[in-house]
Length: 328
Image 1 (cartoon, one colour):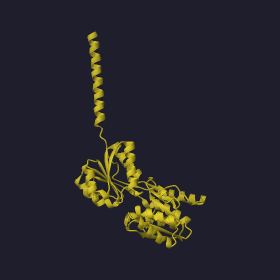
Image 2 (tube, rainbow, N blue to C red):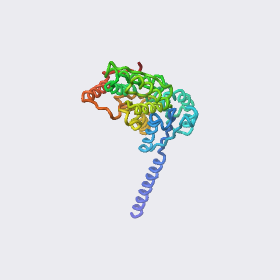
Image 3 (tube, rainbow, N blue to C red):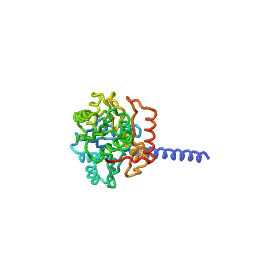
Image 4 (cartoon, rainbow, N blue to C red):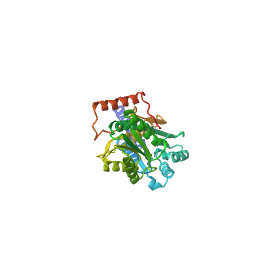
């Protein structure tokens, strides 16, 4: 009996050790998710698009345990080279930030069919290229409502980085919002032709101010920061874009159109980390999906009636009763 009891104990220990060993191997075999991102043309420090995308990956690193790398245009010389490097380094997901990356990401995606590519701000037909786009026009409509309600000169301005379909979405929504709040208001739209020139942004803003614009909305990356600076210097109001840019001109920026690139990237990575795939090939995020919105309203006082109008318009957009134009 003693021998049988001893044999049972030994067998139990062996089974227990085997289970522990298998558990350890399983834990070791759990692969860390590697993600690479090719930033937009200005790169880190643009206080807008690239910084927001980078922040989304930092959050994914801190909360999900991913490992990420990034490339900037001033380092690689062109987008295709940076994207190729990220794919060659073994990143399971490679992100291209901005519509201007589409041609390059498609070129590289064909060479690396097993790599998943995530394109922000444009859509590709390639099987291994997924996308996230935004209804920028909806967030810009809300900016337009504020400008239309509060302008004293009945003239407001818009500065776009370039005259391209994406930026025209910002301009179109802004114009529609202004006109819905104040049909008599004049909306002046101009394009800088550059997303990376703050001095040019100051010049564009000065021209609009000379035409009596008392609210200016830039969608122009680093060029737009020059717009905010000039607006503050000339004691008029302005709006931030992509992220809350109030800190750039605290006496001028009334609110910012939040294009939640950081949230979109973090959510996409979280979905992939949990499921091993993206559930949708092409995501489109608007007010209803909380992909765009407004930062806090500051500097200007709003009546209860104006606040209620803002809420009513938001709800009408969410439920489809207001269709915001994506061109003008």
